[in-house]
Image (cartoon, rainbow, N blue to C red; front, top):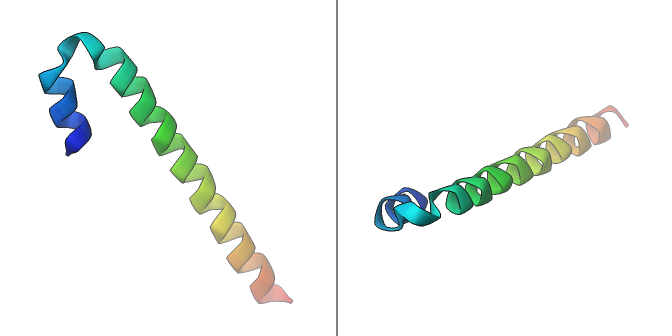
Length: 45
């Protein structure tokens, strides 16, 4: 919510905020994939 409020309050900084938000989303996606990979690979052993 804070990101979207910031986008509304600072429309001139919208591209910077949007790219930052996208980067954080991509990072959390990679971290979740890794956690899933580790969880399922250790279950087989």
